[in-house]
Length: 390
Image 1 (cartoon, helix red, strand yellow):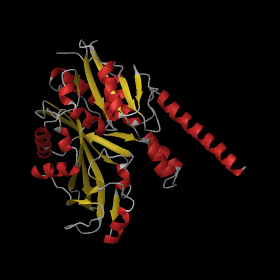
Image 2 (cartoon, rainbow, N blue to C red; image 1 turned 60 degrees about the vertical axis):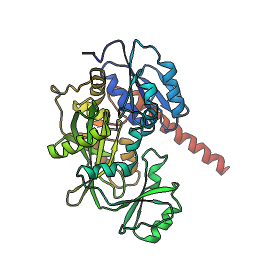
Image 3 (cartoon, one colour; image 1 turned 60 degrees about the horizontal axis):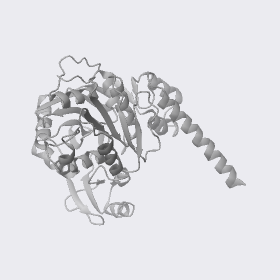
Image 4 (tube, rainbow, N blue to C red; image 1 turned 90 degrees about the vertical axis):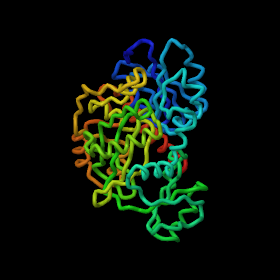
């Protein structure tokens, strides 16, 4: 058995989302591993201040990041494990699978190009229906065209979740005219139209798969504590998975057909009658990865052990459930800046929260750096306004 603390194991995080990447850095760092980070420019915040980082490479594009990895990590005496928060990275490595598989461990579907077949939502919907999951009625259309068999209201979505600014194309349309008006703002030629189901909540199931789905572990599920109509939550309750063996078996059958190895998340919409409708699979770490580690389920540790030893060792895990996690930046903007809840109430929510995206008492410099960047931004805005007035 290869130890994850073996001096010949190197971890590379290839990321683009600040808090997701930061969570992975902390999850690996708390294992005694100092990961290297390949960071693609774009996010307003750069997670480079963590005490756990070994090297931090900043690149201009995903292709540059891939080239950096291929040229920087060439010592065949090392085992290189690549972790990511990005669908784009997953897609890119899948397209270079044959070239990379002998030198690196990474999320994959066992053959070049296979995982890309299952990244589009419509392909995932077909697979979900095949194995008995409820799926909202869906059609794929060219922008400007009307649906054939959907009743309003409907939702517009991008076909691929790694489309840039994909959330801008998410629009709820209550009539044909609203759909035509939405098309004027949407920047994609092909779209997915879906029946609108009134959302009570969302359920996210966190899992990991090794050996192409033969060995699978689903420890945790989560729901939002506060849900915005038509939006995304930022305060979440995670707890031990309890949706039953039938659901678990369906998930495993889907993962086995894809032949996926790596960390994944499967998302469901919960309607007012508590029915679950399949939404999508994310073949990557999510923003909750460090919260899961705080619960006692360090997906980064399981990923390393699974890749290096080709099996999942989960017998001795002790899961602390429930566990509350907050995206404090988004939650503050959503509820305090808009006066939806009082500061006193929000601070009470903070005291109920176990994990945060930015703040961590053992790794505080990223939080201080974020606060400094906010202050710097406000000062810069203040002087710009003064110049305009003059």
